[in-house]
Length: 213
Length: 374
Image 1 (cartoon, chains in turn yellow, green):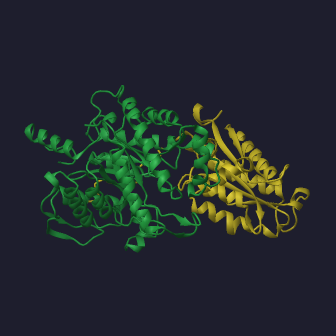
Image 2 (cartoon, chains in turn orange, blue; image 1 turned 30 degrees about the vertical axis):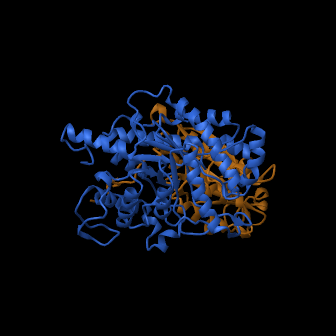
Image 3 (cartoon, rainbow over the protein chains, first blue to last red; image 1 turned 90 degrees about the horizontal axis):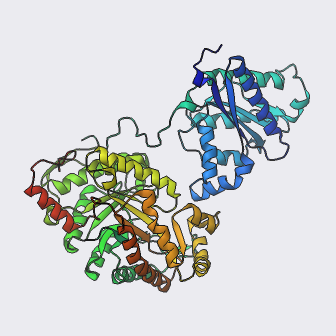
């Protein structure tokens, strides 16, 4: 029996992958995180409605949005599926010490404030574990700026991680995925984001069209 | 009295060599050509000419009232407007005085479209902070209103020196200040402000998809009704637009393409998908008529339709021909948009209609207007 009302037993999860190759380890990481999150929610009797956003499919539209200042209808719908979710997983390859350009371009076309309060897992992939700190010096601040709620565990997967069970220095990839998923599921459980109607014309609190006089 | 006004607006852009990136060239020629084009707009039967305000290259239009005063002397029926005048970085006292003087010179053929500008550094250049964009627009306009509506003003605000017992001069023509449209492409605060005062709302309607403006205009209409100025359908709406007309659709597109490619908005997108996604219409007269006759299906019956005058790479000859083409389609558009226009939808505001309305009100009830007290 679920402790939650009937109409709220599903949570929306948006999964954003900036992987470029097929198959992509960035997408693989995103999927693993999504499955683990859905499993945790399922343990609580909550269903998960997952939307996967492959940024490579929208690369031209994202570039067009940067240059022209508006999104195509399709890209607008993609962004809305993210901003109206109860939780999100972002996964990007690390290119030249940071998130990929496509990943950043996508974040750049999202309106300020639209990710505020969104529970988020940040994930990244790379050839070696030497760039794992990019999660915390580049990707985490990006979402902090957007006032998203980033879970404490970020998940970095180096190529070697896909064939190892962890070493003495830390937990293996499956454990890190499980921990991050648990943290996200916990935040998503209490989220009402996907049930909220967002008013695009909400005036700032205290705004008076006549001024203060 | 025309139900709707049709006209052209210019940003006051100079050609560049090379286009988009090079030095601004042909300054004097372009300014003189703009005067010629404004006169021609009147000749072909258009109602409005509007000029923008900028303070950076490659623009020439730093002072719309100077140019418009010149046009007032060179034309006789053309309504002179701004597209837009900066409400943020201009002192409201100067705006009140300059446009009131212009109003007298032009015999009342003046209104304003106010905007916040699109060049960030203009704020610091004029001693302001861009983060105050909305508060400046709100406070400056509140003062502008009082300077026009009240003979003697005491004022204290956040952004300018206080005023004690100040009277802005000259007083507006017939004590009826220029009509004001508030222009915005994004901010609901400005739509709210327009609705609050019962002023017009102008959506530039180019650059973004129609669905974007549809939402903003819908919001303004709702708020106009909320503040008690009339029904939502009676709110005063103006739209920008952009067209290029040749007898055949193919010729229009082929000729327009290089001009489009030499603009900032013509990058990284095909002309066809830009045509599909924004209100730009390039084609035969009938295609353009169909597109713009359909605007009210999206936005409701409206009062003013302005078209972008030209692009900086267009020659005077081409720009004149485009005005000729507008002169031919506008009578058809007038007829189309008049048909089925419901009773009670206000005509486009003009000085004489506003003077008449004021007389009527004075003759009738003494009750001040519900919200603004006017």
